[in-house]
Image (cartoon, rainbow, N blue to C red; front, side, top):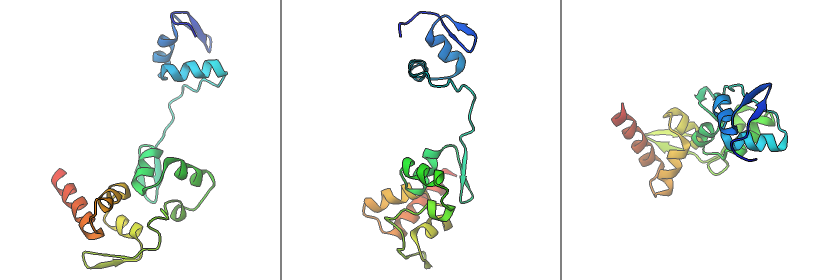
Length: 147
């Protein structure tokens, strides 16, 4: 679409697509693609917060990172109506018992929930070669330094 041409959207005329995008609070490229494909121009703010297993996240991506899942995997499980305890299972860590700080956990996800530790961060430390106890200690130590 040529720039600097007026555009009318929902009865409102704008001097340019950029002005319309700013006014509607939509990314310009998104607005252009919606206009080209005749997709609906949903301009209402959508509450993207998601609560899963008692934790509230700002968006689906943040939730997926916390549980160590891909965003698309999490979305498809939610859309399919899976129960919460099944949604958050990361098969890479499913069924592995672990002992941390003298306490035995039947699953890594149970241990992470106990220490309120994000699985993404835990996974990073494990990939760096730390054992589960060391990874949790680093997470807890960093949390104490921030507080």
